[in-house]
Length: 432
Image 1 (cartoon, rainbow, N blue to C red):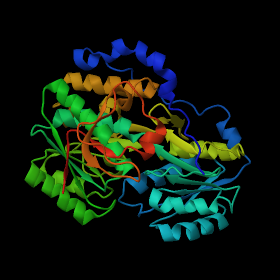
Image 2: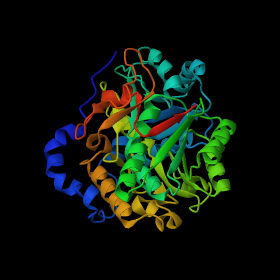
Image 3: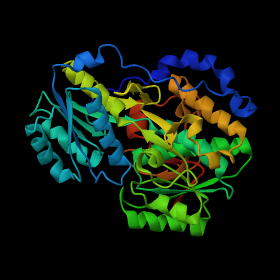
Image 4: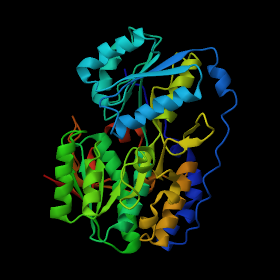
C-alpha cells in the first residue's frame, strides 16, 4: 500500500521564501554576513524522559554491512546507541551483514528477543520486512528509501536530506580545487545516489560560478556499496588519469580516503565525522565531512511507538531543520557539516580554510543558517538540467541532455525526490 507523502515544509513557506529574495541576492553580490553561531546545547524537551518511563521499547537495527570501519552502518549503530542512551527504558539490539534472504528470519529472531521496532538500514534488505507488517501489527518495521516508496501502516520508510549538507560540501570542494577536476568514487546509479550527487554538484557549481572557475566532476561507479579494493582502484584512476585534486565518495569503505592521503590531495567525507568519530586520517587531508544523525529519525519512531500511535507517519524525510536533543543535552540536526568534532564553518579544516576565499566561507555560513531555519533549500533555488545520463526507471526514461526538468524557485515533491530523480545534472562526467 502506498500513502501520499506529506507536503514538503518549504511549500508552506513560499511567502517567507519570496520575502527572502533580497537575502538570497548575496549569491551574486557576495555581501554575506556570517550566520548566527550554532545554538548552545539545549536541555531535553519537557516530558520526553517522563514519556519513556515505565514503557519498555526495544529498537532493533539490521545492518546490511559490518559496522566497524564503515561510515553508513557505523552511523546507524551510533544512532541506535544514542537513542538508547536518551531513554532509560529503550534497549538497542542489532545484527550485522544482513542480506535480503536473511532479513526476515533475523527480524523474527529480534522480535523473539523483544524488538518493538525493526529497521533495515538499506532498501535492498529492508524491503522484505514489509511481509512481516501484518503478522506483527504491534511492531513498527522500517527501511531506508533508495527509490521504492512502498509503505504500510506499520512499515515506515525514511531517509535524511543529506543533499543539503552535500551542497555545503560542494561549496568547499569547488573552492579548493586548483586543477578544476573533482572525483567521486560512487556505488552504482540509483535515485538515492543520483540525488545526493546532485546536491554536491550544485554546491560545486555555485562555488565555481562565484570564483570564476571551470570545474568538472568525474563520477566512476564501483558497482557495489562496499568493495575496498575496487574503490581504491577507481580513486587512483580518478587521480592519475583525470587529475582530480579533490576526492569524495558515495561508497562505504575507507579506501578512497587512504588514496587521497597517499596522493596528498583533499578529501571530502560522507555519512560521519570520520576524523572526530573514527580518528581516520586528519584535517590535513579531510577538508570537510557531513555527519548523518539517523537518531533524529529513530527518535521520531520511538516517540510514536511510546505514544501507542497506530497510524504513525510512515514516510520520514527529515533535514537540517529537524533535530533531537541527545542524552547529554546536545542538540543535533538530522544532517550537518562536521569535521574533527566541529560543526558549521568551523568544520572546514584549518589547512583548507586558508585556501577558501572569504566569500565562500560566508556563503557556507549563510546557507547553512538558512537551511537550519528551513527557509532555503538548494533543490528549491536551482533549476535541474539533465546531463542525459542516469538510470532509466520503468515508465521513466532519462531526460535528454539539456532538458530543464525543474525550473528554479520551485520545490519538487518529496515523492519525486525520493523515487523519480533518475538523471545526473549537467556538468557531470560519468566514466565507464
